[in-house]
Length: 381
Image (cartoon, rainbow, N blue to C red; front, side, top):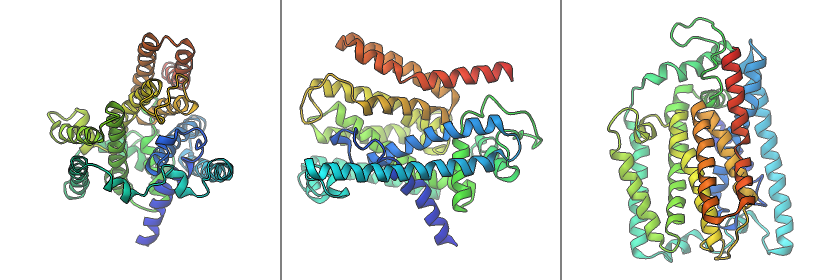
């Protein structure tokens, strides 16, 4: 039984998002076409699909809404994963003729060097910084299992997810009293707890184990990978500086718990909460995309080839990050929309590219629609 549960977790949390990540494989920049980045892409698309399937379900159905959500969301994920594999196969077929890329391995390692050779080519300083970074990250994951953190939000978010599993409704049970109530419009659009409930139902693993142990195992490494890429963009010519940046962030994470409400506290003690994911991944991810676009226009990425045009992948990444923010927190959508708008304006002043500006602003349309629906439901409801 434990083996089946583990396989269920691997299938729904690792394999399915990884296959979904191949959907935009044609437009992912070569420098970012790596296994973990493919997985992150699929995970963000998964959260966007969570919003697009979960919100209509809970608004339309009252009884058995959760059960319908599980069926629809699960089917959508499998369908997206199948299309991802088809997209990968088509891309490999085309690449075998143009780029001599005939396998997934060669696709994800376009530089034709193994991981071992990449590490051996690193400077001694980079190897030391990388080892320290990996040890710090590993220690945080180990402490996740050894130390139990009490959190008052368990009594609401995990209670809502548990109520969905038990009663079949979504955000229609008062977490404080256990009585049936009207749809909670304040929280019902943030469906991250329902994602964890889905993983629990689909794999057979208890919800609290999924929330407190399994989800952080995924979110902590991908967050640090994003931060490593953040450092690589900030210091494109110094690999050791990128790892040193990760060490610096580790220090902030480990010693940033000066209150219960800092991003660092949420990251390590409330990793499974949408608010933590929004503050530690979504918002830095948006900033990373803009910095990546800026470095591309300067010729410091993409094989030093200058390009002022905004890649389709970068625009899709912004749109999906804004939409995925809705799964984490309703306020995160507002912040994401504002952040994209502000950064678009800043880069308009820097680059004087109106076409890129309007394209970047267009990526916040999903977030604006989300906020309008939230406002309408809150006022009318």
